[in-house]
Length: 159
Picture 1 (cartoon, rainbow, N blue to C red):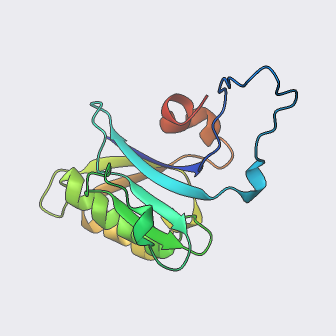
Picture 2: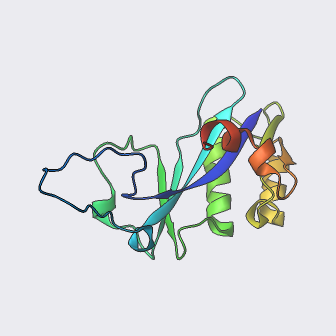
């Protein structure tokens, strides 16, 4: 059993930070979130506790900039772009190919279950057909209940 979910991240927006300033500083301001860049991370976990495959990171833009890639990445991540920084049909299918490769799914493998939300990109025909061809049973959470039912929202990406 596998569980997949997307999570939005705002770059450079720490929360709950303690700031130490000189005593002569009377006012302290932080930058607002409206000018911060955001990205989406698609993570997958297995019921046995494994995290796999390496995440898919979606940045807003038209092409991947070289300065986005840091030395601390493992190289197994998939870094891609979309105009909005969110997933789309192309990225959902690329993620599925990535999942099939790293989860050991395939037409000659045992069937597995994939838990995910009902986002439109997970309901497209190509996505559903490719899952069936690779022995992946889709279980989509009901709309507007993922904050309660989605294990990654409740336990990993949640508060």
